[in-house]
Length: 102
Image (tube, rainbow, N blue to C red; front, side, top):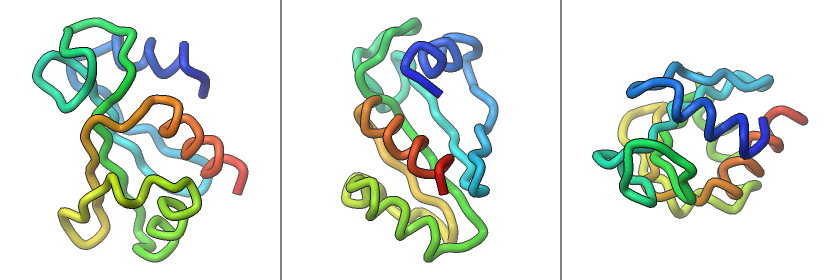
């Protein structure tokens, strides 16, 4: 996924569908005037987005967040679900690339 594809995904619907990566990580990515994203508007491009991440293996997801150097931006909100607001789009794309390579 590249930046243009991500922006198209976000513009495609008010509530976007889950994105499942090659390693089983599921992403929920939103951006709008009412989400933790920037700029606060209904249509992109956005510089930062709201992201939820889930995986059945808590430690695998944790290690991937650490490897992508974005763990500190995420809060664990349930057993296997993390959420972050205002996550930089380039950092998100790096995380997606890391997950799809492994």
